[in-house]
Amino acid sequence: MPRKASIRERFESLYSQYQREVWALAYARWMDADSALDIMQETFLRLWRQLEDGENLDNPRAWLLRVARNLAEDYAKSAFRRNGTQAPELFGGVAANGVSPAEKMEKDETFARVRELLDELPDADREILTLRYALEYDAPAIADMLGLAVTAVHMRLSRARQRLAEKLSAQDVRTSP
Amino acid sequence: MTRSSPQPSPDDIDRAFSQFFRAQLPARFPEAPIPADAPAPTARGGWWRSRLTLGASVAALLAIGFGVSYGPGVGGQPKPQGGSGFDPNGVVSDGKVIQNHMPKDNVPPMDMR
Image (tube, rainbow over all chains, first blue to last red; front, side):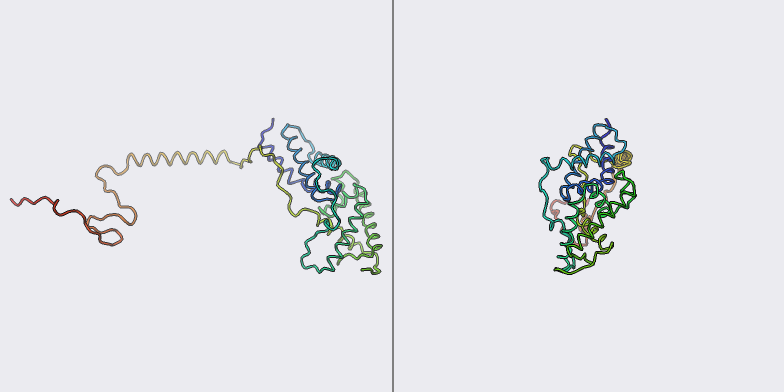
């Protein structure tokens, strides 16, 4: 049985290293920041138990991402889901510091279109977009994390960008400068 | 607000995605979810620090004991401490004269023989 102090040190190190990636995968599945936090917390609690049981994790990152994906899948049926899907305007709740009402409205419309698009995309594409734009990972880092070819990442990013461009121009919504 | 707009540029699309996803990312992630029964983390070098503290405490105790045992012996004049010590001349150290309350009747008569 490993010492609890060393478990704690390792756990905290893994948490600070991978919390954002775990959140990003959970977010990509549900498109809800709070649900993603719940899933992230649950994933790390399972990691704690795993470490406490003395289980050897050769690749903790892969383990965490796999557990996060499974938990995100189960989330719909599980008891710890609280909020459900929220309205698009809540997702676009950026603090509007120094932004005029017109600009804010425009931004909200753009966010609604982005969200519409994301709802239509497969999970795998949403994962790529979340990692690219929320965590600012480049294509090789995304490919490494998700076990994909870099060209596949580029292709999916390009496809998602093209679809958003069509959606925005079709809706006559201009993105804010 | 309907206007005919050209297809947004790649930069516009990138900006829209970036703004959207950054708005979703929590500003601050919660602390690591560590169960309540987990031990508190130990600072590195904690064992040595505790030994040093213990050693210093024992040395201080020994020094105090030594001072008490072999300090100013019988006949040693204790020094007045602070600013309110008594002076045999009836003057406190802050300069105020105080009244000597010793009754003069108690002074034994001097034998002049």
